[in-house]
Amino acid sequence: MNPLVEVKDLFKHYQVRSSFWGGKDHVLQAVAGVNLTIMPGEILGLVGESGCGKSTLGRLILKLEEPASGQVFYKGRDVSSLSQRQMRNLRRDMQIIFQDPYSSLNPRRNIFDIVAEPFVIHKLCRSRTELAEKVTHILREVGIGDEQLYRYPHEFSGGQRQRIGIARALALHPEFIVADEPVSSLDVSIQAQVINLLLDLKNKFNLTYLFIAHDLQVVHYLSTRIAVMYLGKIVEIIDKNILGQVPHHPYTEALLAAAPYPDPTRRQKRIVLEGDPPSPLNIPSGCPFHPRCPYQKNICTTDKPLWHEGSQRQWLSCHIR
Image (cartoon, rainbow, N blue to C red; front, side, top):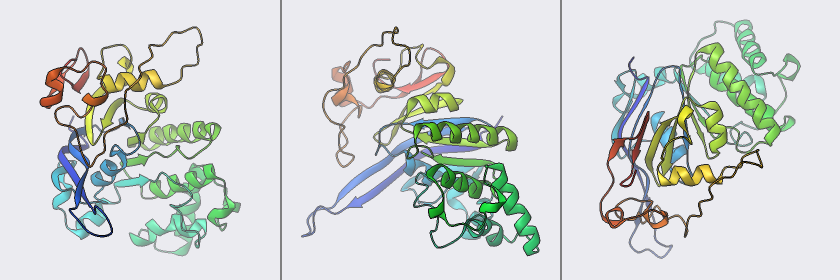
């Protein structure tokens, strides 16, 4: 089976001014040589600390931002080489659910108009009646009733707003959705509802997700495979069924140790990372994780680790694993 999405050696840099008074600009390395494949029908979880480049990677895949170098392929087509017209047609197959349900919906438009916009832009309805039927149908799929159609975003709770954002992403029946931390700003009880909704919709519409989060427990529950990101690089990709059962990249180990476990009788190995995360303006030499790694060796400070296959169904970038 061929990948639905394939990312090859993707880089993204930003120029950062040193100060208001001028001086030498700095380069912020948001995504640094990412290689990734997403298979049809799977949920690939992307996890890492805030600021590691997860959301930027998602936006690069959808061509909402232009990469500095590298390629993104969707069904074998090089997305970066497509014209604006070709990309507009491809938007029907690739959509995004934004992180913040409060800022991602236009406060001046009612819910009907917000969800109807994709149909109008792509000219998929021949009449107002057909448009109304499609909008009400997709909103019902996410649990929004017909009596709420003409309300405005401020009249809904955070969980309801995220459901509206999901409906907008589903409107054109895409095959691939980037879910950019869709539950991080919601209460825990509402998070569970939205996560289960995403799973139900995935099975009903045969969707493929790139699910971005910083909560490893949520990603483990949802995903088929898990990619771990640190300072713009993917450091490990692993099947979710063996997470915690094999030797991992030291950063993955630290994430696992930091995740709360509901069984008080189970003893967890506690890993305390020394120091603060390095600045993306000044990436360390060698392995970018070495300043905080409890297992570091001399080679970690000088040589960049290469991708290699781990014990089973995992790939990682580490000198000591």
